[in-house]
Length: 221
View 1 (cartoon, rainbow, N blue to C red):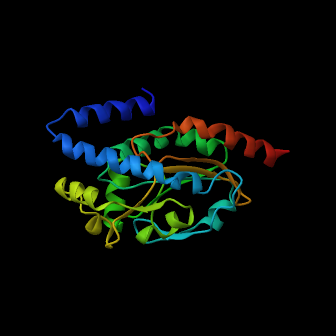
View 2: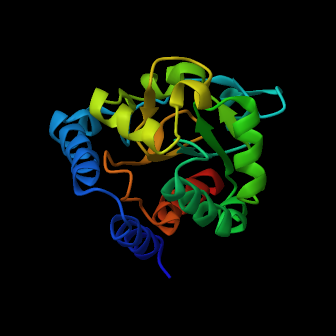
């Protein structure tokens, strides 16, 4: 089943549960407000230079983007957290094509604002062969133009679900990255970008393959 079909089925199942309509309305309204803000249109896009980053993985080892790009292109997925079923399904979809991505000369990382313990849990639970890097306070997400703060009403909904982001992320900002997927060329220039303020909508990982193939062909020319 295609990734978006899986996500659509998850959304329908979630909203058909005994969840008060007013709670669903708050969630929909928050998404609509983020879409209307136009922030996704202002995020970094294809042709922009990606900011360098140096972030810890779940074991505290520092991973530098410059080192990864020295090996070839880099695929970056911004990941909200282990508490988000849509995000976990997205990571598993990337993992399913990880071999194809690497065959095209690229490295993969996910970037998330979670604590190290939650990063380790997310990697373990999703069976990932690539690292999740900790972006405390969404500092790197902010440099990509992805960082946003949840509205108060949505904070209350999340707390009602048992998702206290201040605890999950180890800091009180109640910010998240908009879901995004990037392909960064070895020269640091973004070759592919997909940003969506609706966390229930994700690009199929197969969509980044043409960008990787173009970079691979250019490197071999």
